[in-house]
Each structure stands twice: as C-alpha cells, then as structure tokens.
Image (tube, rainbow, N blue to C red; front, side, top):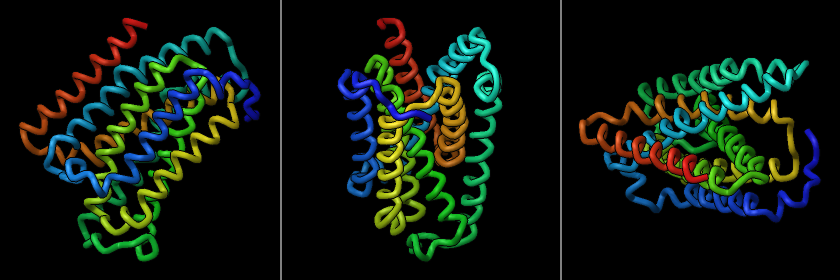
Amino acid sequence: MEIQNDITAYTGPGFWASLVACTVIVTIHLVTPRLRFIRNPKGAWLPISVGVAIAYVFVDLFPHLAKTHYKLSEAKLTGVPGLLSNNLYVISLAGFTAFLGVALWVKRFNREQCTTDLTLSTAPLRVKLECASLTAYNFLIGYILAEQASIRPEPILLFGVAMAIHFAGIDGLFREHFPKLADRAGRYLFAAGLMAGWASGIVFTISPAWLIACYAFLAGGIIVVATIYELPEIQSPRQYWQFFAGATLFAALILATDYFK
C-alpha cells in the first residue's frame, strides 16, 4: 500500500464523481428513518433494490473481473499478486462464504428472539457482528469508490447509483429488524465506515492485483447481502415483477453506458 501522490486524482472528474457517489450513499444511511417508502418492507423499493444489486454484479462486476483477469494473466505476475490474479473467483467465493456465515447466524437469531428493543450496548455478539460486517462492507465499497477516481466518471456514478439503491433496501430492512439499534447507532456506523473507506482510498493506493481482489470479494458479498438479507422478503408475484423491472432496467443502463462510452 502506497500513499497517493498523483494530484490529478484529486482534481479530475473521477474524483468528483466518487465524492458525489460517496455523499449520496452516506445521505441514504442517515435519512433512511425519515423515508417511509424505504421503510415499507412490502413496498416496491426492496425488490427493486435487490434487482439492481444482482444486475450490477452479473452484468458489470463479473465481466469486469473477467477482463481484468485476462489482462493480469498476460502480465504474468508472480508472488502474491500472481496468486490473487489467478484466483479471483476463489476470492469471490471467500467473500460469499464470509458474509453468508454472518447472515445465517443473525437470521436464526431474528427468528428465535424479539429484537426490536435492542441497542448497540444490549445487542448480543451475533448482532454486533452483523453491524461490524455491514460496516466493513461499507468500508470496502467506499474504498473501491475512491480507487476509481482516476477513471471516467460514468462507471463510478453507475457503481454509486447501484450501491445507493442497494443500501436503501438494506438499511430499511435492518431498521425493520433492529429499529432502535439502526436509529441510534447502525446508520452512523455504516456512514462512518463508508467515509473511512473512501478517505483511505483517496490517501492510499494498492496494486491492480489487490484492487481486483477487493472487487472479487465484494462481488461475493453483494450476492449474499442481496439474496440472503433481501430476497426472502420478496413473497408476492407483484414484488417479483418489481424485482424483474429493477434488474432489467439497470442491466439496460449498464449496457447502454458501455455502448456509448
């Protein structure tokens, strides 16, 4: 890890795009308790957010991993960078497995006990672990947002929009399960994690192999967070079609952005 010394990363359009995206997601975290359409678990927002997240992983993130894997393979890296670049999908599996373990552990607790009155101080270890994992999830997304500051603003904004919609669904669901915890601590932890990740990405830079490993790990995490936390809440044909609309429209947006670049 090295300190960023390219001043253009702080002044170019990519920097401002990443800053705007970070600000929007932080705002989503902080204002979720005030947005009734997000807080309604039977509304359209939750299935749409799942569709957007899934579409982003399969239509943008996985193809990006494949292209970068090919480029890194041609570079014939050795040592740890070579190991990372040759095992990107294993890293995605690691991200999937790590977040899945936390999600299943907490979901079992949600079914067994009343959780609406929990605060951060009274929450059991497994709920605190969920807060920590979602904070780390935010940190990773913030870091990746900042690391993209040297590229075109369009993919940064696309990533930011996807994650903002994704987090709106996650935050609403988290608040439904743990209202006091979400209002008093959770939303601030998630916002702080995202800002800390973004600031770290602006100040420090990592090698392309480590960066693409972060993308791979995030891909596995998004699949778990979207499918294990959110997807089970989709229980009606209408919500399925809302999910379908979100996935289809966002996939079309990604393809259009690639076509006109």
